Image 1: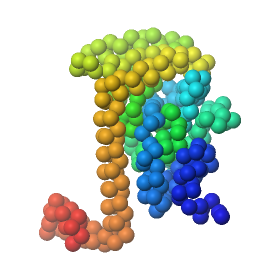
Image 2 (image 1 turned 135 degrees about the vertical axis):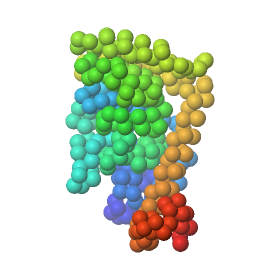
Image 3 (image 1 turned 45 degrees about the vertical axis):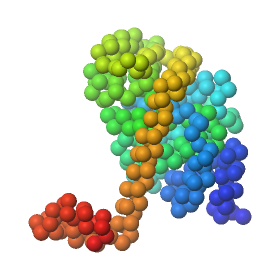
Length: 317
């Protein structure tokens, strides 16, 4: 039987058993928006919810891929099974990921307990493909202890990673902009952990001090998590042991405070809304484009208003 014709229950069973080919095939179904996704997600749902999802974000040039590679090595050294979703810019021609599986992560090619996959952002402004939550669910159900989501690094729109991760790690580097720029980018509001990479460069300690000073000015409620600011040299794999300790400490706080459940409920709510809106757009594209164009002409002509037009569209008139 060809891979394409393989029954979903068999494919899911193999993925739950940790078979890498089956996991890769399921993620391909997610990326292709396959009609089989409903069956796949229904089968995986009871097995998900155990993995710790760690988002890594930061401006281009701070060393995200190198840091991810070093973090994976540190997590493996303490016995964790790790999956990485590297969300790359999309090709304007194929819609696929431009960079493919990251060259800097080839250190783990031969490790059966590390899975690395590039996904195309497909122009999504937040840096994350709409299908990312479903790909995370596949990896979670497949038994990976930690799922690392590395984003493309597109500036202010990177804040979306906070909605997809249990723990958001923000990378900075000396020479990549001062503290005020960091505040403008919104990263002081989204990070659970800050790491100043390339700490062997001049100005690294100043960046760390600036971040700590700005965070002391932010108002936090009693018992709230206070993000640590660490330094690392990812290229030399230095400082990542402390990063893993803080990731684990944050996971413990999430569980004890109830914040882990709250974050995951918010994430699921967003995913449901996204799927529903995507399905509505698909239906309009299938049967309602002419009607939508007609309503748009009526709005332009002033014979109706956009709210009334939207009501008619939703009602199927």
